[in-house]
Length: 448
Image (cartoon, rainbow, N blue to C red; front, side):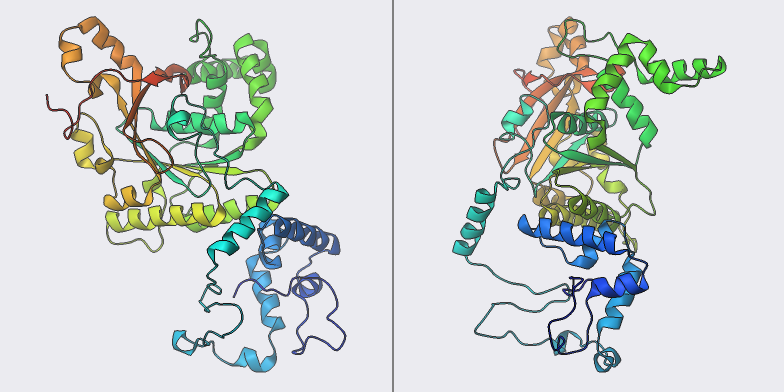
């Protein structure tokens, strides 16, 4: 077992604790170079988490704060065990102790006891949370796209898995990253954006481009693109001017973008995903470390789901995707956070005029595990031919719009079609959309 209930750095009660074990904190101070000040910080944080109905054992808190390693905690736990117990091999599943009655109804498992709780007990715990003002589990986090938030019942909720799919180049990364930006800018939560396609510098340049335009203004296209920004940096370097912030402040467009970014930039956390290191376990550890370190709510974004490595690698793509989507759903529920994941399509979906949820790479398990499924399509490809053949000029304008379909929604309406204007030059969409009024291509509902 990695973590121990022997968390306090206090002397055992008079007469000892009956088995000669010393507190975990004391052992780590003596043998792992943990300072008393660090231990005091960890204990205070542990107490704060417990007050918010999130109890963490001391070992987990110390590791999440970066004060000790898991190896050091394991070594200290080995020293806690009495000599006779340390010499005995661990019992297998058949040797698990029986459930004891009366008392707490629980059954031992390899990862801790399983304890059922009555409905009245849940209601009592909820009442305590409300009395303490801890309403995180009830309040949705808006994604900053209207009318999408309206269709989702106010936004995404803790414990939900949201899948965002679509064809190549339709704007999945653009929309997901703008959602992350909107979450952080609103102040409702922080976000962790794990991207397996782009590095942190590229994403930050996208933020600058995004903030250099105002979609609500009369002329939103007066801004700076990522390409323009890169060229200006390279030109300034050739002139010997390498002060990036001075360069950004010199242009009114980028100066405004920098001013906006400074308001929320410390709540946007970026991570370039690695096909070796950034596993589900690594992402889960980062989420848990954030929970221990900060009281700010967190929304996790993964771009994209099929890129998350699984070790050892399953034999089939289907098996790998099933492992990842189940893990992301478990992470969302265990940590009480919304998880938004970009999803690629299968081969059939790439050939389809309009991608649907059944085209997502991974099969039916994706649809079962997800709480919300959003599908993106270029409006020109999504609308029925009748709207293109009789008005070619209007049809060309369809290329400037993305259709977002809510195909599954456990917290609100589904089968909802809305559209958002593309501002891809500035790495964003116009967040103020509208409902689609045209008929859309649908193999099940509309036959051309």
